[in-house]
Length: 229
Image (cartoon, rainbow, N blue to C red; front, side):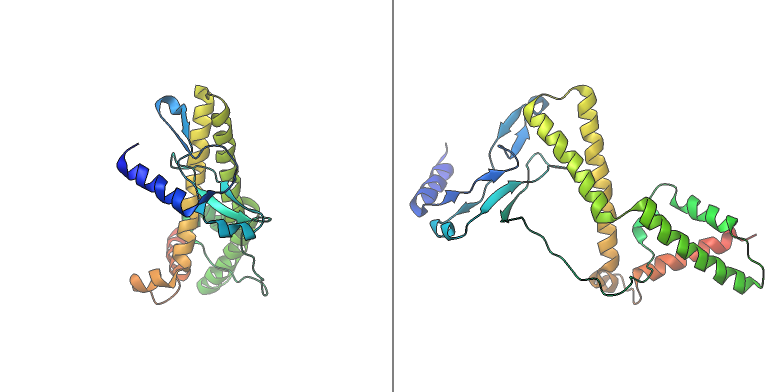
C-alpha cells in the first residue's frame, strides 16, 4: 500500500465512512489473463447519518463495454422516472431507422408496391401518406420500442457477466458474450441518434431551424422521388 492509499484509508477511518451492501454481484472489476481476475474496486462510501434512510443499497449493473461494472444507489423498489402520455403521438421520422440494415430497401419495396392513379402531385402525396402508415406499423411491430430493446440487450450482457463470474467461459460462450455486447452497443447508438434528434441544443449548434426529423424525412422523400419511373 503506497502513501496515497494509506492516507485515503485514514480519511475513511477518521470519518467513519461505511460501505453499503452491494446487490447484483460480489465484485466490480474483471480483468487479467482470460478475465480470470476479480476484485471489488468501486463502491459508494457514506457517512453514518445515512443510517436514517432504510433500504438504500448499492447495485451492480451489467458491464457492456468496460471491465469496471457500473454501480448505482437504489432505494426501496429501485429508481426511475415515469411520465404521462397526453394524447396520440404525432408521426416523426426517426433518424435512427436509417441505421437499420435494409431499411431503405424496405421503404423502396413499399413505394414500388403502392398503386395510385391520378396526377403526379396526387400520387406523390398519397404514396407518402401510405409510407407513413407502413412506417408506423413497422416501428411498432418490427423495430419495437427502443428502450425495451436496449433493456433486453442489457439483460443478455448481464447474463453473461454472471456466467463469467461463476466459471471460465468456453470459446463459444465468449463469442456469445461478445455478440451480446455488440448488440447492446447497437441499441445505444440508436438511442444516441434518437436523443440527438430531439435535442434542440444540437439543432442550434448545426444551424438547423426545423426539426431534424423533418429534414431526414425530406431527404428520404427526395430519394423516393428518384425511384419514380
